[in-house]
Amino acid sequence: MFDEAFRVRFQPLARPLVRALAAAGATPNQITVATFALAGVAAIVVAAGFPVIGVGIWLVSRIGDGLDGALARVTGTTSAFGGFLDITLDMAAYSAMVAGFAWLYPQFTVGWTLVLAGYVLAITTTLALSDAARGAARRVSGTDRTFQFTPGLTEGGETSLAYVVWALWPEHLEWWLPIWIVALAATSLQRTHLAWRTLR
Image (cartoon, rainbow, N blue to C red; front, side):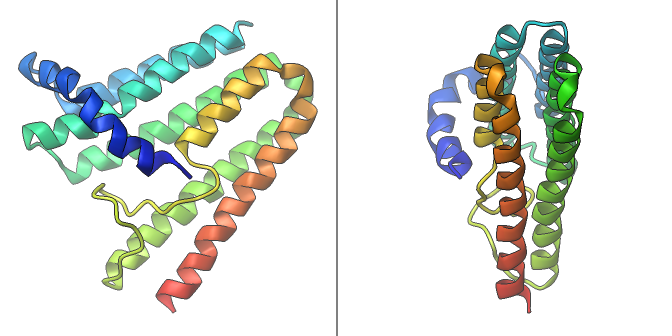
């Protein structure tokens, strides 16, 4: 719900770091891959039994993930492939974290499976709506990103918040997981309704 608002506020704050990365010769795709690797480390740390430390690493990786697009715009190197790589590795990172929690708390196998299914539906409705809207010459988002990401109940910020909650209060996972699964389903329904209103 608040990803785009955070992104707008984050970019001016990150500008000095983005300029430093540009001066060092870093490329947006390198940042994308590096932050994905850091997210992979976070998932491994969670699976190893240190969820709070793992989620701390995860949050650092998500801050880094906000730098690739900013760097691309500063250096004039935006590309369709960069957008593709970003969303692909983002979803791999989010899923890896769920796998890490599932390894640590295997008693909730059904819940973790449904969370991953929710991720599939959430990203499918996002990308399908973006592509269909482009084909129909419609705008469904005000963002300047490669894909027309539409607001939803569960976006990147909410997902990171969910991981923080799971790490800090794992004794309540039997309640947190159903709530998150319902929220993911609601997000898919939100975007399906938007598609119905916009693309008919």
